[in-house]
Length: 242
Ligand SMILES: C[S@@+](CC[C@H](N)C(=O)[O-])C[C@H]1O[C@@H](n2cnc3c(N)ncnc32)[C@H](O)[C@@H]1O
Ligand SMILES: Nc1nc2[nH]cc(C(=O)O)c2c(=O)[nH]1
Ligand code: SF4
Ligand SMILES: [Mg+2]
Image (tube, rainbow, N blue to C red; front, side, top):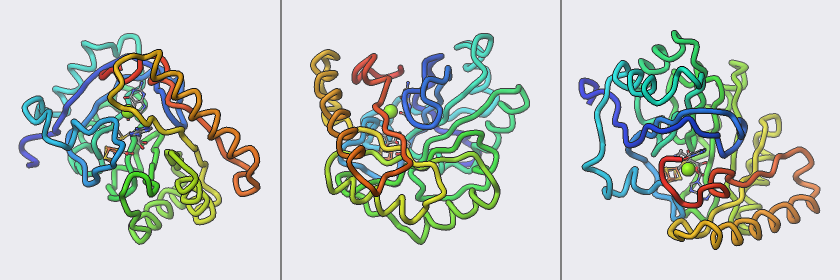
C-alpha cells in the first residue's frame, strides 16, 4: 500500500470551508478514499461504498502538490484534507511536509477513531465523533488518548458533533462533559443527501438549523458552544466537489 501512495478521490477548490472551526476559510480540498465507519447519513459515502472505486487515484505527495498548483496555490494558501477517513493513511505525512514547506496551512477532518503521529503537524484538526443516528459506536478508549495527546501537545483542534435529533444532542452532552476544555461545534445534520434541488434542500436545512439553535439556546448543558450549519450545502446543495 505504501508504494502506491495516497488514495485520492477528489481534488477541488479554491472554495470556502463550509464547516466547523475554520468555516469561511478560503481553502482547497483533498478527499481521500476509504473509511473505517459507514455512517447512515454520510454525505460522502462514495469514498467507502465502492461506487467510486474506479475513480481512486493513487498519488504521490508531489503529484498532489502539482495538481493543487494547477487548481490555485497562486490564489490560495490553505488546504483541507478530508475523506473518507484520512487518518487511515500513514503516508499523508509526506503531503503535510511538502505543503508546509510551501507555507500552505493544513486543516484535516477525521472522526477520531485512529491516531496518526502527523496529527501533531495539522494546523486545524477537527475530530468529529459520531452520534447514535449514524449507527456508529464511539470507542472512547481510542478517542480519549487522541484528545489527551492533542491537548497536552497544545495543538489547535476542535470537536464537531453532527446533530440530527434529541438523542444526538444527549450524545453531544456526553462529549462536552468528557472533554470540557475542548472547543465544541454542533453542526446541523443534512437529512437528505440525495435531493438534487438546492432550494428544496435549503428549506429543510434552515428548519433543522433553527431547531438546533433553539434546542441549544435553552440548554444549560451547552453554555459555551458554537452552533453551525454546513455552509457549502446552503450554497451548493448536495453538489460534489464544492
Ligand atoms: C464526510 S466526513 C469525512 C471526514 C471524517 N470521516 C469524519 O466523519 O469526520 C466530513 C464531515 O462531514 C460530516 N457529515 C457527513 N455527512 C453529513 C450529513 N449528512 N450532514 C451533516 N454533516 C455530515 C461528518 O460528520 C464530518 O464532520
Ligand atoms: N466547501 C466544503 N466545505 C467542507 N467542509 C468539510 C467538508 C467535507 O466534506 O469534509 C467540506 C466540503 O466538501 N466542501
Ligand atoms: S466517518 Fe465520515 S466519511 Fe466515514 S462514514 Fe462517517 S461521515 Fe462518512
Ligand atoms: Mg462534506
